[in-house]
Image (cartoon, rainbow, N blue to C red; front, top):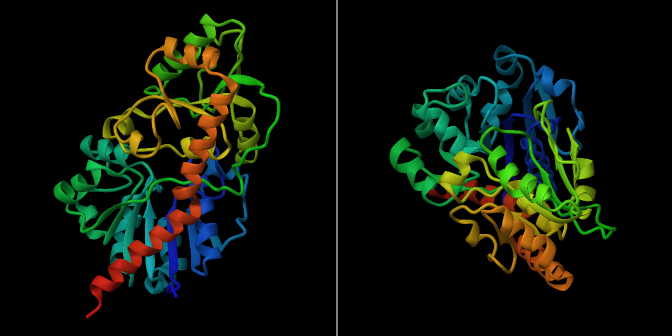
Length: 361
């Protein structure tokens, strides 16, 4: 019987998914941890941006508490951190480096850093941006949980002194993401917050194909796109889709586009949660190419890898319906066999228990 853990997580947000992918990850992970019998307290800094856009103000799993300052965090939750079996600080937590110092000093159990943005974190460290994490803090965490696998794990241990860097990929919640057959509204869709480094991919793999195929139907959904964007006439734009609408969004696309941030593409082994969500919905994926993607999906059978507009157009216009559905089915089986939130919860607990076994006399 697996030992039940008390877990405290300091994360960016679980109450609001507006403009961040952390909330979706934390919601599914916490739910599965609680379902397995573990006790979870999630601590979130009360930020105006998220306060104005809370789509899950009271998560129904474990406990969630908001704090307004580091002093309030210390005053209200020191005992929880001291007595927890596992205390986790997430990436991009406001004043995360200071919160991390406190957790490393205060926690009586395992101290972990959960990096949902590993390549971005490492790029920020290289630029001297240490608000979320300092280089010297890495060695002070017993466990570094990374959304990125591959060579980055060795780099964290070799260059930064992490005692244990372990991959903990993003995941999908199959209760929320599953096929829901309905007539397609778009030939290709993309969901993602605007970013300068991803925008060339949007241009090359969606907007250029849209301009070249007037009969095609396309959609882009995500906040922070410039107000003066010149969208082609056959491209619909929506500034935000709450998680409750994601399943329907995927199920109304014939294909969906996945694009990867530059830092994550360079590091490789950094799958986006959108990959897993789309696959679980049975929507075939067109993706940019990066090292390690073939360890998750078989190119040509479970996913389409594209670099040029012509490759996207060929898939949209020429792939037969039987093959389209077969590709989607193969990808869905792959994800459900190893990349659900329940898988990640078990992996997290296993990492913690491995540390306990190493520490035992």
